Structures are given as structure tokens and as C-alpha cells.
Amino acid sequence: MVRITERFNIVEYRQMCLILFAWNPDSEEQLIVAANRDEFYNRPSQTAHRWKDNHHIIAGRDLQQQGTWLGITQSGRFAAVTNYRATDNRQYPYSRGALTSSFLKSEQSPEEYLHQIHDSQHQYAGFNLLVGDTSSLHYFSNRSEQPPRRLEKGIYGLSNHLLNTPWPKVTTGIKQFSQVVNGPLKAGTEKEKALLKLLQHDQPADDALLPDTGVGKMLEKLLSPLFIRSPSYGTRASTVVQIQRTGNHFFLEQSYSAEGETARKTTYKS
Image (cartoon, rainbow, N blue to C red; front, top):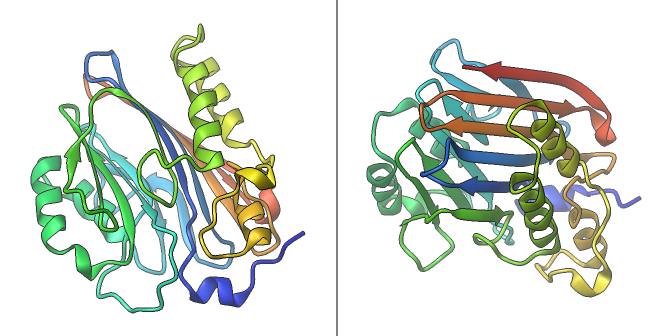
């Protein structure tokens, strides 16, 4: 088994997440999300909970910077962030986890918020950011030349490059996610279990399909599955979110201990 070294930590590849999502503003199930958070096991964090200082927010929390990787609010706001994989030893004034938590705390529209972030994008390390409410869903990366954009209805995949970059975990994830979302399973327990199961797919990609992001073939292989396992780094949580046009929501988080052992499961409904 490959051991992720301290060098890997230093060059800022941490939090190799995957977000699969379906956005259809005309559907009763307006937003469906299946996401994995990958991180070093020694980075302190809280599993999903209702924040005491902002009771309307449901999200996990990074205890090192106090931000979050993915969260929702009682009113149906949604935010999620992934890191952009690149060698970068620079220090930045702000944490990427603040991008999501600040949106969830605010009352700005997604468009207004991303306009503000666009103006301050160079103060953050490389990121991909999704923010939305019951009216619209928007995407922005500060490693793209494209401005923030409003997403059309469809099924998308996001890892640690730009939206829908065809990395094996993204293409495999979109295919399996589409089968669940568009399949015969009704909304509810059966669909949620199916989405959680696909997030636990831990088969590495074939060598011929691996991207070349500068980490070497051994690490590319280790990072290629939807669900990552290693002694020091891996998938720490899987999250399933469903938000309806009414603002009603379902939030499920399955957390994992070191090397992928199932730990706490948390569910919120409204």
C-alpha cells in the first residue's frame, strides 16, 4: 500500500474531494448531491452537525480553519468546495473552507456572492466552488480563465481539476450517479443507500487512464478511486444531499475512521 508522505502534505494536495450532482430547477428534487471528502486523518474536524453559532447551517467543520467543505441551510442554500490539484507552496491570506461557510452565513444571492469572490480570488489557494439556492446553482474556479457561471440543468462531476474534467473517478462517478438518479428508485431510503454505495467504490483506475498531475504514477493510482484508502490519508466522509424546490432537504453523512472503516452516520431532514 502506498503511504502518502509529508512531502505530499507540504505541496498542498490535501482534500482530494469528489462531488457528483444533478441540478434540475424544474424538478421536485431540485438538487441531488453525492460527495466524498478526502483528507489526512490527523487534520482535526467535526462530523456534520447543526452549528451552534449559526443554527441554520448543517455541515461538517474543519477545526483547523473553522470552515467547511460542504453544507446546507434550513432555507435550501448549498455550498461545496474542492481544492485544485497543483504544486503550490505559497501562503494565502484566507482558507478555502471560508468560501463555503461565508456563503451559508450570508443572505447574498449566489451570483452576487461569486462576483465578490471573483474580485478577491487571488487571496485563496486553487479552488472549485459551488454555491446555490432554490433559484440557481453557480460554479467558479480561480484556476480557470472563465468567470463565474450559472449552471444549466444536468448532471455534473467535480474533483480536483475543473468542472467535468474527465478524470477516471469523475467519468466513472457520473456514469454510476446518472444510473441511480435516472433509474427506477424513488426518492427516499433506496436512492440514498444506492448513492452511498457508489461513493464507496474503491477500485483504482487502469494505468492507461490515469491523469498526469505531477504526483507520480503511484500516487495517481492511489488517488484514482472514488473512495480512497491509505494509512494516513483517505476518504473521511461520504455525503448525500437532496434539496427540493420547497426548500425541504435531506442530508446524510457517513464518516469513516482510518483506512476506511465505517464510523458515525448522521441524518437531517426537514
